[in-house]
Image 1 (tube, one colour):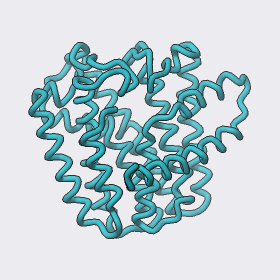
Image 2 (spheres, rainbow, N blue to C red):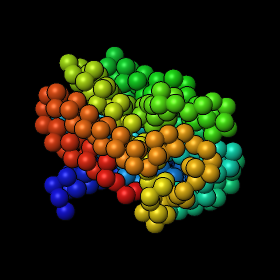
Image 3 (cartoon, rainbow, N blue to C red):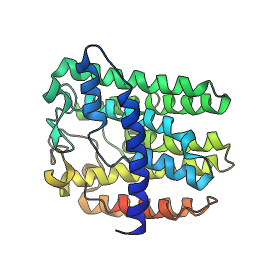
Length: 293
């Protein structure tokens, strides 16, 4: 394993242990509610958002224990969005990370409630941390904005609008969808770590996070064309049939690959202006650009 892989696994394991401990304390009645929540939350995945939170904490010199509750809240929100996204009324996916989607395992009604439960638990975590002081309240507010009607939900809504053919796809509109649908939840861990540490590089982190979010969604679009089920863990090749707003649709396959490479270089350039040891994050940019799943 490379040094990057070792460090990524260390961050991922630290988060998984924290999340598992939290879920052990969650006792729901009926039990199916907690079971369905845990089924999706603890179904593996890259954990790139909590890993980013822990890595940024290290760059900033922030105790990782301070960011872990927010990292868990963020991953709960991300997971609820995936549960709802997989529903027949949305993307209608039967598999997630190689396993049956939540609604295929527990039924549509229970899946909706599992998503609702994760979203509410996420904010319960933020409220609890907010008792520690103003910086913690601000971190929770950042997560709320990134996840809510000015963030991820707005992006999801715009994505549905384009899929329905209600608006013409342009570069400006595509980047707006990227910035909200995917980018905001990748930006959130950097901004939360920054406010907890009161970093002077807040706006540089904001620029880097925004670019990384665009890059991640670009490679996601590319994987829908070039990937396979075994690697990606869900159905591929469906974006074109559903008329989704993607960089491949707008630029073509080779044009999309070129723009992803340019975006990655812009990520590197922005990161170079941030104080601290950012070598892990530089490696992450390359991993995101070249990812196969």
